[in-house]
Length: 410
Image (tube, rainbow, N blue to C red; front, side, top):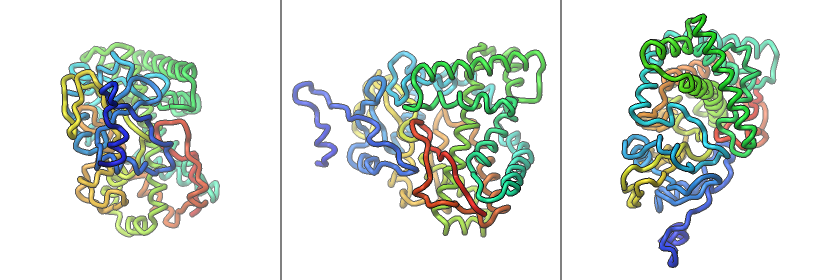
């Protein structure tokens, strides 16, 4: 019997299995704690205690992940009735990501009218234009440059601001507020509450203006659809628009900068990609699998009935925590799972989630990543990191992994 199993044998006095403190270790760069690999093999469902909230079951395998994310026996909405297990001081208001049926389809239906493959493809010229503009500015400023603040952040920010109808010139005002939704130790409870409310107030005022003077943007479309069809409350509209802004701004820019880091540290595969641009779509999928964008776990789900996961009984009312980065390294699904392979096929990664909460913006995120990488390495074929990998600094105290800066030469 493994040392892990021995450590968590049922306590003879209480009859309950003690919970292990989670997370197991601090996230380091894009490394994944090797304990996940051991757990997948020996104890794929583990009782854990997070810094905040009640104890939960940590789920680490690909198969169990698909069950808890896609099976209606697991509820996201029930988290509102519990002290949800979490890494953040306060529960995060996740809007559509915190709903089950029938509320979830009501909000998703509104967004699905916008995030179609056809409509996303119509955005390609504008996205390509922005990539070229930012590279022009980078080159004009001279090497070395910073791909984080000089490219990734304004690139993702411009795209989502254009889509939503949020004035990009307000970015310096609202950007700091976005951190409130993924801060673990970098912000106090009061700071999180204050910045969350500031963002909601800002989006609320913007919606009032769009209702009075509609424009060709998503916020105007959301307000119109809500008023005429789906009847969302103002609170639902504000929270939904805020989640979209956070995902499109912070999540996409972090995934892009982390992807560049991976490519710079796998130069042989980067050279293959530059020689054969047709590999790019598959490379983006592999980057979505390989990059552990979420440092540890995503939002808890609650069992509505007793469910068995990998031989462990999760009772009704208990919560499970999905460790998606672990599932994306599951050796039973991905051959040589710890290796980055831009030619990997098939690639059923869970980087965009799974089930009813699968990312609606996935087509847009894929397009942004493809355009950004192709344009950068076409325009700047000798682009490379300007410092040793060990010198790069990473953001601390956040759920999303991201570099503070990525200095480059070309």
